Amino acid sequence: GLYAHLARPEEPDAVERQMQTFTAACATAEGMGFTGFERMVASSRVLIGFPQWNLTAVNPGRFILGMLDAPWAERVALRPAVRAVKTRIIQVKDQPPGTFNYTAEGVRRAAVLPIGFGEGFPHRPPCHHVLVRGRPAPVLAGRGIEHTVIDVTAIADAAVGDEAVLLGRQGDATITAAALSEAVNVPILELLPRLARNAPQRYVGAIAQKSSLP
Image (cartoon, rainbow, N blue to C red):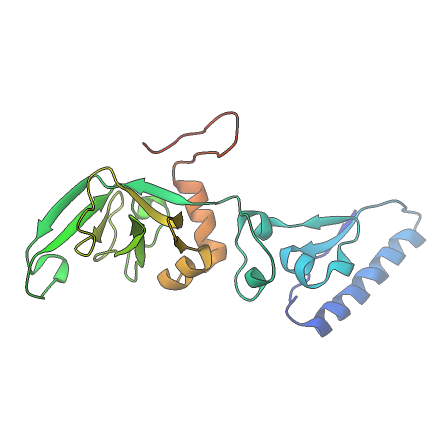
């Protein structure tokens, strides 16, 4: 087969020039006696923007994993393979002013999550927020390798055992891959493979599970 990667699918003129070269290459191959070979140029973005170039095979990697960024993500309904990243609160504790560079008056409630930059999340701020009981809980300071500390002062009923969502939906609230990528300042193409590779995995709908969080 013959394969090409269209380098700038956001530029129709560039796509047209590259396809002229690819078509000429296919004609050269046929002129040398090769027939019936597969032809592939369509990455996820080409699938969305130039369906006429689907040819005989496609390469929808980003599409399957949900790693499409703007404006491509808004043009299709995605059900990505990386559906969510979740954990549970293992400790809730009142913290006095001065903790985590906290200088405001009054006590702040902090919760500890057993997930950190060892699972692929960024270490240094900005670290965004997580969802607890359907409400946002900001991440405090930098993440540890195995732990993340969040502020649950505004979520008075937050307790040990509560689910915390770092990516995905909880109730009516959602943290999308695109929003998480923008908030932590890591490209979505880099962030999602980190999470998929490093975090324990639960396969939804599969016969067997690789591993799972409690």
